[in-house]
Every structure is written in C-alpha cells, then in structure tokens.
Image 1 (cartoon, rainbow, N blue to C red):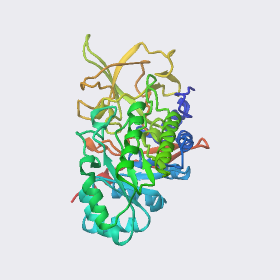
Image 2 (tube, rainbow, N blue to C red):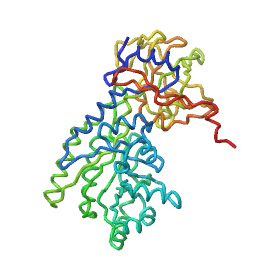
Image 3 (tube, one colour):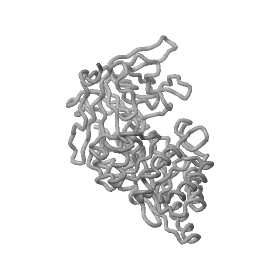
Image 4 (cartoon, rainbow, N blue to C red):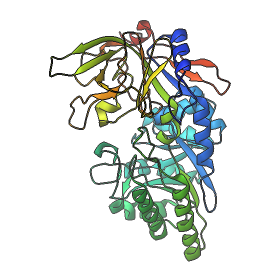
Length: 434
C-alpha cells in the first residue's frame, strides 16, 4: 500500500482493486479531493460577495458536474452543448453563464433565447454576437454580460494565453466604444464584465488583470454589478510546481474592489471560474505496461502503455508534464515523483499504442522524447498518470486509430469504486456512420 501524493485520498491498493474490477485503461477520480477544492474556493476572501463558477470544459462528466454543483459552485459553459449537458445533469439555467465563440443562428439562436429566458446569463464575446441578440435583450429587458479582450494576456504556453493580440477571445478594447453606443441606442445594460487572460498565469499577472478589469469597468461600464476575473488559477501537477495562492489573490481582489467602492460608491460582486484548479489533481489515467523496447545501446528505454495520447493529449499539445506512479500488479507503490526515496534509478519514456510519434507522455517543448526517472516496472504492472482530472477526458482524440473511449471511475467519499461512464463499444464508435 502506498499513498500517491498529498493531494490524493487514493492509494496504490485502490488502483489495483479498480484495475481488477474495471480493466485498464481508465480514468480514476477522487471525490473527496474535488469536494475539498470546492470548499477552499468558496472560502476565498471577497468584499461584497463571491460566485465561483466551474469551467466545465475541464471535465464535463455528469457525475462530476453534480458533485461540484452540490458543493455550491455554479457553471461556466463554453458552448450551447455544454450548457445543455449541465442542464441535463440537473443544473438550473439560472446557475449557468455561457461564454462562447459560437454565433448561434436559426434553431440554435432560438435555443439560446430559450436558455436565456430560463435565466442563463449570456456573455457576449463579439460585436456580431451582440448585434444578433441585441433586439431580444432590449425587448425583454435582459441584462447581458460582456467579455472584454484586454490586449494583454498570459499563460503557461502560447496556446493558453487568451488575452494578447494572438488570440481573439472577447471584444477588444478598441471596439468597446461601438459596443457602448449600440447598447445606449437599444437600452441594453451590461451588468456583468468579464476578462480572462489565460490559463496558469503567474500570481502577479493575475493581480494585474484585477487592476486592469476594475479600471475598464470604471471607465466604460456604469451599470456593472459583477466583475469576473475569469479562471486560469494555476494548479501544481508536478512536485516542483506551486499552485496559485487563492487566499492571497482573494485578499488582493477584495482590497481593490473596496477601493473601487470608496471612489465610486458602487459595490461589485466578484466571480471566478476555475476548472483546472478544481479537478486536475483529483484525476488519474490508469494504464498497464504491455511492452518494453530499447533503441540501441545509446538509445532510450520505452515503456509501451495500453493508453496514451487518446487518454491524455496534454504532453503532445503543450509539452505538459504529469507525475508518474509505478505500481506493481500486486498493488505495491514502486515509485512516486513526490517521494524522493523512491527507487528511481531507471529512466524511460512512456508511450501509448497509437501509430503516432507524438503519442508520448514524455515530450519536451521541442517535441522530443525526454526520459523520466522511475522504478523499473515489469509487463502488466500499472502506470498511474497524475494530474489528469482536467483537460484529459474532455480534450483527447479518443477515437484515433479506432481506440474506444475509456471508462471513468469515481472513488467516492465512502471509499467505494463506482463507474460513472462506461467503456465505449466499437458499435457505438461507428453508430453514426452511413
């Protein structure tokens, strides 16, 4: 038996039991870890009220949405279908905000209006979105939210920066005057202003976003009642990483919102929309070693897993690192990157079974395989890939090479293993082909 890390209530024997019951590969989630994260976010310091919205794009499985919603978090949806999925999971449209690049037309526009009529907040992200919904909002006296593109951003990689000139999320500051003028003509009120600069930004960058967004509200949005600082709260997947200090960020935001009140006599409610921060370290990809290879005397050791990029594409997309845990088929924890005493003299590259050079969990920023230290495992031993609760199940190319979507298993607060998504069948994979 071995505890994986300080974040987890799952130990190596739980993984071994889950593998016996469900067969690898699968996703394994720790319910208590998710609950604890939700509670910590709701305790974030604030001035005049705090709303925490879960960015469901991180992981949108119904059972996890229900757990998070029942803790008191609301929902940030990135598409009409995400909003629909949240509603199917039992979440009221009143507790959903839609922030999307989509431009709904015809039937989809009618669906959007129906959702808004049931209380969903629509966060307009472009002039065209605004013009399309403007008459409906004005006629029905529905206040809108607006996402502002600030012209500056940050993130752990270029592809996770959503605020600079190389990304197009939100209405750029240079277009704010036409937005304000149109709203005045139509009688539309923006009561909610949102800026999201990127994922995994450094704390000082997040603080700068707080300052910038409050200044934008003060200059342009006299009816704003809520300021949303977006998500992107940094989470620490690897031992050498540090997570965002949400208490310190809350204290900073509280101070700035109180100063805004002193200047303007306007009290702003605060919103944040974390996704990664809520579920990343609550999830694992559980795989088995099916083969071992070496590329010559001066080459690399390769461990072939029965699941790779089709389960976790983040190393391929971002050169992201995830912690590895080597577990014997008998349930013994052989090595953990969070335990410096582990037997880690062996070095290897973990790859999947896809016919793709990028199917590796060990890619560096240049796309090259970089061996990692770990205990030397045997065929049929398990490799648990940590930090896989966010942007793995929802974002991976699951059907590449016609591999089927892996099941998802929940380790409940009652210490029970429960399937929350079954393994896809080949028949399901091809069911919509004509």
